[in-house]
Image (cartoon, rainbow, N blue to C red):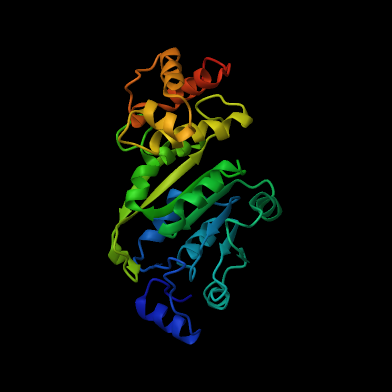
Amino acid sequence: MPNLTDLSTIRDLCARHDFALSKGFGQNFIINPGICPRIAEAAGIGPGWGVLEIGPGIGVLTEQLCKRADKVVSIEVDKRLPPLLEETMAGYDNFKLVLNDVLKVDLKSLLAEEFGDKPVAVCANLPYYITSPILMRLLEEKLPIQNITVMVQKEAAQRLCAAPGTREAGAISYAVAYYAQPKLLFSVQPGSFYPAPNVTSAVIRLDVRQQPPVTLAAEQETAFFALIRAAFSQRRKTAANAIANGLHLPKAQVLDALEKAGLDQRSRPEQLTLQQYCALQSALYGIDNPAPMC
């Protein structure tokens, strides 16, 4: 097998296939040989597991996944990459390439067809520009996956893993915490990539929850996250002002709901926990949510 982290090997491979890395696809190939084994190990995969990989590139992470899991299915949107992957992954009969856009493919059907009852993990070196849409699709669709281990921009990693109710948290922190238990694993320096990006990266793991930490009916989830997004849409304002503006509600109604929920009317958006936003939603819309979890 070729050494896919060797820069001369990468350049020779790309030259033979007339392939140029695309900024539009956010392509930065990993050349630090220690990174991909760490990602694969962090995912906790082994015999009996299936892995869904997003954006295999030339297969440097894919190879490590194939060495551990029963089957690896990689989704790639760049139509120029299949000939390269056909060469680099020729030694692995447990690898399958799906040429499609991960935001458009029917993931539930794909997982059922390819993995059946196997436990499934998601692994990826995600393009920075599309990190949040991909992660939220994986989480919101409640797919049969155990965990998601991905490399993203470090700043995004810190926000994704920030605990709700802390200064570092943003709206996406609450969404991630609702669906999963996040953990920031390790940082990756720019020199670990070709070409080197301008920012530091980090690897995170999201362990998908069987049950969310607050109790919501399925039809309440959209309004719940709309409430949180509204609160963070004007972060420098109080939660009351931001929610009133963002949801086009009378401020008096929001203040009254905060009081009914037992919350400080001067609270900032990042000071409220998931449970407190749940209580606020109940007070705001007159929802009778079960008490123990909310």
